[in-house]
Length: 221
Length: 221
DNA sequence: GGAAACCTGCAAAGGACCTGACCGCGACTT
DNA sequence: AAGTCGCGGTCAGGTCCTTTGCAGGTTTCC
Image 1: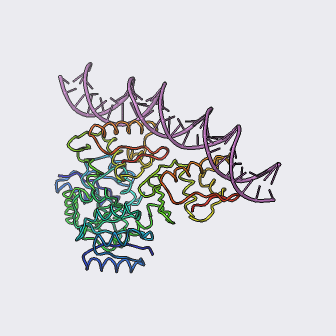
Image 2: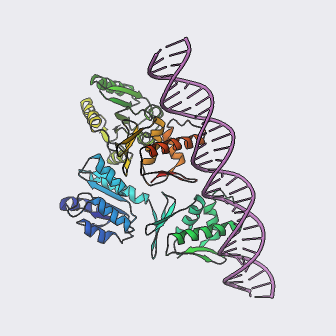
Image 3: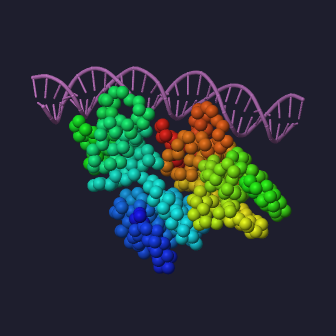
C-alpha cells in the first residue's frame, strides 16, 4: 500500500515487476525512459520508493537519480542493473541510491527490498508549499539544495513539530520531545531553541515558518 | 585454497562440512554458536567466505550476519537452513547474505557455491564514495594513485562509516564496528582513531572528509 | 494600563571533541 | 635473548560548541 515509481525500458520485465508490485497491494506509476521518469517522478511527493533501471535507452539511470534528487525527490531509490561489476554498484550508491539489485533478480526479493525501503522511509519530508526536508540520517534540514545542520536538541524539537505539519503542537509536547529524559526546568529555554530553529529555517530559505500560537504551542506553515 | 569460516551447531553436519572443505583444499575456522562466530569471524579479514547456519542455539544466523556486517566483515555470506520458506530466504538476503542453501543439502553443491562465492569475491567488495577507494584485501585506502595503509581497527572503523556515505553514523555504531567483541572502555580512544584516519585521508588527498556531527557521530562527505 | 506570554541578545557552564604525547604488548628482527 | 617496531589503548590539556538561563524588550490579551 505504498506508491512505487518504476522506470524500466524492457516491456517484459516491466510487466512482471508492475504485476508483482500491484499484487502486493502497491500503487505503481511507470516510465519507459529517463526523460519520462524525471517528468513524472520529480514533482510527485507521494512516491514512497523509486525503482530505476540503470541501463535506459536515453540516459544512465544514475543521471536520472541525480536529476530526481536535485529536483527535490527524496524517496529512496533502488537500482536495477544487469551490470554486476563492483564499480557500477558503487557509482549507483554515490549517485544517491539506497539499494541495488543485480539482474536477473527474484521478484520476491525485489518486493522485499522495496517494502524495506518504503518502511524505512529514510527521510521525513515536510512538503506543504515548498519542500523542506528533515533528514534524520544527517541531522540536518534541507531546502532546494541549501542545508543546515541541527544540534541533537534542535533536531528532536523540530522533528516533533514537523511530525504533524499544519497542526499545532502543544508546548508541553515539544518539551517532552526535546527532553525525553524528563529533565528541563526553565520555560524560556524552549523559546531560545525556537529562535535558533527559526534562524536555521531562514538560512535554508524554507517557505515554511515556525509559527507560534500564543498560549498553546507551535505549528509549521 | 581459500579460508572459509563455518558456524554450525550440529556436530555431525559440522564434521561433514569441515572435512569436505578441507578435502577441497580450503582452510576452515569453525564456531559453534552465534557469539563465538561474531568473536572469531568479525575481525578476521583473511576470511574468503562465511557459511552460517540460520538456526543457531543462541541466536538467529541473520542477526549474526548483521553483526558481522556492521563489524566490517566484508566476506560473502552463505546461509544454511532447514527452513525452506520463501520469507526466510528473503529475510536472509535482506540481512546481507550472498547465497542460500536449504538443508538437506548435497555437500558437492555446498562446495560449488562456496567456491563460486570465493571466486566472485564479494557483492560489496570495495566501498567507495567519490574517488576514495577502500581496499579490504590490503587494508588500504587509495585516491588517485596515492595510497595509505590502515591498521585493522582503523579499517573497521572507516569501513563502518563509508558503508553509508553522506549519512551520519552514530558514535555507538562506530564503536561496535571497530570493537566487535564488545570490548573498549575509553570514549576518547574513538577520537584518537578518528584523528589517525583523518590524517591518512589527508595523506592520500581524499576529497572526502571525515566530518563530525557533534553529539551524534561521524559522516563522510 | 497591566500582566502574561513571548522574543531577543548575551554570557556562563559544561560537555564533546581535538591534539599531541605516552606506554604496554606482541611480533618480528638481529 | 635483547632490541625494534607497529598497533592498540590511554592520558592530560586545550578548544570549541551546545546547552542553559538571565535580563530586558516586545507583543497580545484582558
